[in-house]
Image 1 (tube, rainbow, N blue to C red):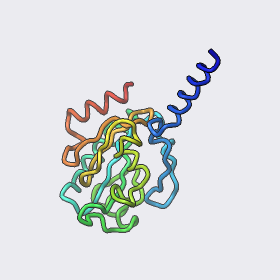
Image 2: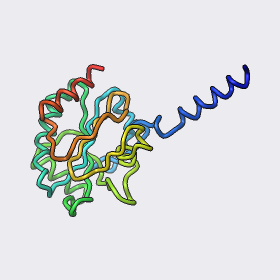
Image 3: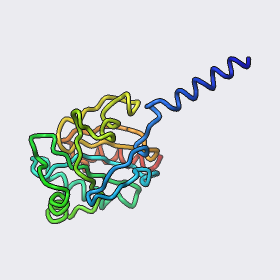
Length: 183
């Protein structure tokens, strides 16, 4: 009986230390001003993590993201914007240029982070988690284009990926996100 108990404890320990036990809260990132940010600061919030670009046909989605943020921040929703230049060089600017563009063109007030890579050999660790089943424990969801949205629940767990062309303000998407705030 003692050996069986030890084996069970060993298996439980192995499971808890697997990559599937990771959450978004395990990551540290750099904000657009160069400050280190532990994503654990967002514990208890529903997160929308989105790779953004300023010279893309989908760039007007910044307005939708900001409107959604203004409407739902008080309900525990946070939008985290990650500029990326992975698709046709549509985010060529420096962090300072990106910040200026976002604030002047779209009055962005949701948290913005330093430019990263969301695919390829230099992919940021957070995006490895978001896009790889081995990391997130749910599904492979490679980034297909700018403005792909990842929804994270209040426990920091991966919930879903929303296509770049789908607007965050779509009533069906909005309903799914708001349901997470009540769990």
